[in-house]
Image (cartoon, rainbow, N blue to C red):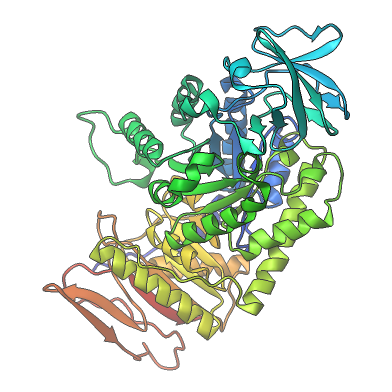
Length: 572
C-alpha cells in the first residue's frame, strides 16, 4: 500500500473542514423529535431547537401546504449546511382518518355545550345559533346513532350524539375541552369502538399519495405512515418509493456516497385498532415505529395503552428498529410554561424503557413554549439515562437478526464491542460505516458509553440521528483505515469527547476499495475469512517501544476480503 504524505497546511485545512461540517453535539442517548408548526417554523426558532437538542424535525402533512413545507425544509437544510447540524426530516402522512375541517378559531366547549357536526361542504358557521364543525366523512350520519360518543383528538373533549338530521349530527359536550381544526374523531358505542365504514377506508388516501410524491421529491429522511393496519401497506409503499427513486435507465453508476439515490426510511405509526393483531409483522416490515398514543388511546381502552407501548418499544429494539413514543408527553405545556409532575414521570418511564426517541406534537408545533418543552425532554432524558446506566435497567434478550453470514458476524462483533465497552469502562465506541449497518446493531445493544458513528454520506448521517445512542459525524474515508482512525481521534479530542488515557473501542464495516459492505476486524485481534472458514487471530504486540496504544496495525498480508472489524485502543 502506498503511503500518502499530506502537508501540515493541508492537514490543518482538512481538520478545519471536519470541525465546520460537524456542528454542536450532545452525548444524550435518547433522541428528540419536534413537530414543526406556526410556533417553530421560523429560522430563528428552528436554530434554537437544533441548538437545544432537536434531532428530527417532523412535518405533519395534515396541516399546511407543500409550499409551506418546502420553506421549512429549506430552512432546516440551511441550518445543516451553515452550522454543521444533521437534523433529519420526517414527513408524517395524514392517513384516512376522520377529522374536523378547518376552523377560523378553536371552539371552547363547556359541559352542556352543543355542536353540529356536518358533512356539508363548505360547512356553515352556525345553525340556529349552534356552532357547526365540518367533518370529512360522508358516512357520518349512517354510522352514528343517538347516544353514541364522539371523542375529539384522543380525549381533548367528548360529546354525546343528541339527534341526527340529514347531513347534520347534533352532539352535546359532557366535559370541558377544545375543538380544533383537523382534529381526529373517533366514535364509541357502549364503550366499544364503532368501526363502521371507516374500517374500509384505505390506509393511504389520494391526498397521502400526493404528499408522498412531494416527500420523495423533497428527499426527506423518513416518511411516517398513519393508521397502518397490516404490513402490506409498508411493503407496497417501499416498492413504490424504490421505483420512484431508482436511477434512470442507462445512467452511469458511481460509488460516491454523494451520488447515491435518496433512501427514505418508513416509520409505521401504531394508532389503529387493527394493527394490534399484526404488530410483529408490521415492525419487521417497517424501518421503525411510532407509538402514537393519542389516537391509539381513542381506539382501544386507555388502560391498555401502556402495555401496548412497552411491548412495541421492546419488540422494535429486539428487531433492530428505532421506536418513537409520541403524543401528549407534555400536553399541558401547550399553554403553560411548566409540565405537570405526572407528565414528567411519564417521560421518565419512556426513557427507562429505552425507546429511541421522544416526540413533541402540539407542544412544539403550536404551543406557547416550544423551547421550554424541548428543554424538559432533554433534562429528563439525560437524568434518567444516567440512572438507567447506574442501575443497569432496561436489559432485554436480543435474538439474532442477521440474515446472512456477514450480518451474523457484524451482529456478534457489535454485541461483543458493546459488552466489552461496558465491562472495561470504555469512554466511547467509534464505528466507521457507509450505510449505517453496524451503527444500527450497536444502537440496539444500548451500550453505556456514547457511540460515535462516522460516515461519508450526509443522508446516512441524518438517518442515524434517530437511533438511540448514536452521535453521527460526516467525514471522507481514506483507503488506509489507520488514517481514518487517526483523523477521528483528532476530531474527537478537539471536541473534548475523548481524552488522553481513555479506552475506546473501534468497529468498522468498511470494505477496502469500492465495495460497500465492509469486511474486517482489528481487535484485540483480526477476524477474517479464508477458504470458507472463520478464523480469529489475537495479538498483544505493541508497535515500537513504550507505545500504549493496544491495537493491531494494518499488515501487508495477502489475504481474501476481510470481515467487519473491531479494535481496542488506549489513547496515549
